Amino acid sequence: MIRMASISSFALAIVLGPAWAEVPQATIDALGTPDSVETSIGTLEFKDGIPTAESASKVYDTLDFTRALNVYNNSFRGASALGLVKGFRSAGAEDNTHVLIFEDLLDSAGLFITGNADTVYYLATLDLTDGPMVIEQPSGGLGTINDMWFSWVIDVGFPGPDRGLGGKYLIVGPDYDGPLPENGYFVAHAKTNHALYAMRAFMENGNDPAPAVANVKENLKIYPYAPGAWGTSIAEALKGTVRLAQEPTIPEMTFIDVSGMAINTIPPSDYGFFELINENVQNEPATSYDVELAGQLAAIGIVHGKPFQPDARMKAILTDAAKVGQAVGRTLNARFADVHPDWAHSENSNWMMMLWEGGAFFETPPPLFEDGMFKPFPPTGARTLDARTAFYYAVTLDSPAMIMRLPNVGSQYLLSFLDEQDEPFDGAKTYRVTLPKDIPAAKFWSVTLYDNQTRSMLQTPQKYPRAGSQSSPSPAAEAAEDGSTTIWFSPEQPEGVARGNWVQTDPDRGWFAGFRVYSPLPAYFDKSWLPGEIELVE
Image (cartoon, rainbow, N blue to C red):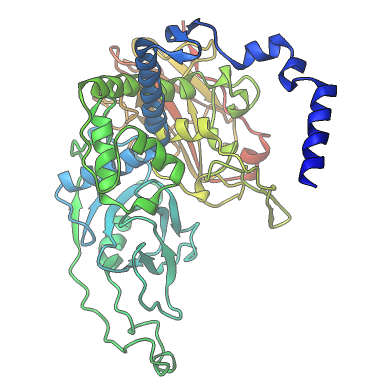
């Protein structure tokens, strides 16, 4: 049988001839490489397909640059999360027991990416290394908990399971394998050893933060969970799987009023970025981020448990990648229409929000909401990478509540980086935007200006660079006789324009605008109401 098979194969080969002879020369040429190739990285030289040492060096430099650029774009979220924690600690906040609170609202002194002065922020870092942490959440909050890669853990407050009534949250870290309560808590699991607790409280009647501040300071508690105490029944303990325990001693909370403090929470856009992301990688479990990102990080020398020691060549490449990376973030936001016109809030508008493409998880658009029910779209199975890069470069923290079609709950956001002529905003010139009557916000709305460079609130003598329907921290904007509201942006207050309708600009700095509606109404989602474009006033 073996001999017959060999004869048959030989005969078949004679009939068909050599297999390679049937492949066209053009195809063979396309499979290989000539001795010299002109590319975007220069001329590459080969000897029968083997690169010269000089060409190999160019290729390796390109690989390192590409991977470093990917790390910058794909892990900016991690650097930004750690930037927040470092900012909190610079203000004297220790993890768990210290809470930063802006009793007089956040103003432009603080460097917080697209922060605002509309609500009372209160913020903390949770350390889950020694076990789960309990948060006794006050009523009336609006916010989220994210891990150290800005991955969503759970919404808190109005969009969360407490629905604004308050309640006990139990946040569990990645290494905890002990007993958990049967009930009594809203339980959520984080993939990192630390987590960000970021909340807002609304001002009473839109003009007084004091009651909201008092509610937070009187009722917010953060403390370690005691397995076998509250939430565990005696019947459960009878199974022998948990030891009964007394309620823990709740430590006294320390609230740090950081109103007016110059706190920096923003990652650098130079080589220091990679040092910061390495610090985050070392602080958190290697399994807290996906293997693809871990591979990109490892390719440039950032590996959990190992020192990050790039040589001079690699430092130069990383520095260059950071420069290009920040250019990517700025380009995707300001010039989004060149490649992502669907990010526009309406056709040809410069008001945009990239999250609608893939939702809070950058994969599938947020579900429709019809007849009191959500109607999810089928999963796309693809990450919206540009949307994720653009979002985290211009915004911090993430939550499904930030991008849902549910009226009267949460808040919605639009950004505008260019005027109606597609030109950047010049701080020395005068602009205006007209908002038609019946602005679709059940609670309130606002327009805030941000510094192009820092993506934080624009610093001017005005201190709170915003206008809106609330009467604090600046006077409420006044509507015209037809119900529309016009907001002006200029270095000096235009003649005849009310103080509440003017936001001051800096002649030496460019800016962009953020439009917010709190508790948006249906007209926002069906786009029967649209904001005007920001126009230059000659």
